Amino acid sequence: QVHLVESGGGSVQAGGSLRLSCKATDYSPSSNCVGWFRQAPGKEREGVAALYTGAGNTYYHTSVKGRFTISQDNAKTTVYLQMNSLKPEDTATYYCAADRSGWACMPFMRGRGPPKSTDFDYWGQGTQVTVSS
Image (cartoon, rainbow, N blue to C red):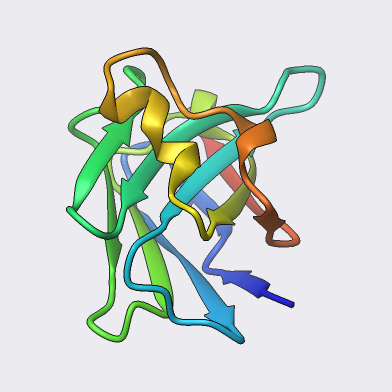
């Protein structure tokens, strides 16, 4: 059973930075799909960023392009989301997710749209990010 443990959330002022970490236990796949989603109160969960670890393909939501960066450590057990120039509208609970088959990354790799939360098999518990103006 795969477990994902997130850390790094917190409260910052607009313009600040945070780095979220998602450590995977019980597996170290060489080719899969990992993603970060967020959900604000009263809103649907949306994909923020995703990474196909085999080839390094990445996806970013238009609202975070140029500000957020998804990456993975060399051991491929921890995924990071570096968030710079944070805005109040980035306030949400952030979740990391993983799909060991890599299939969850196929929509954006094929130019057919963003990653879907329903395509991911494993989820972290979520970490709160609050950005004040």
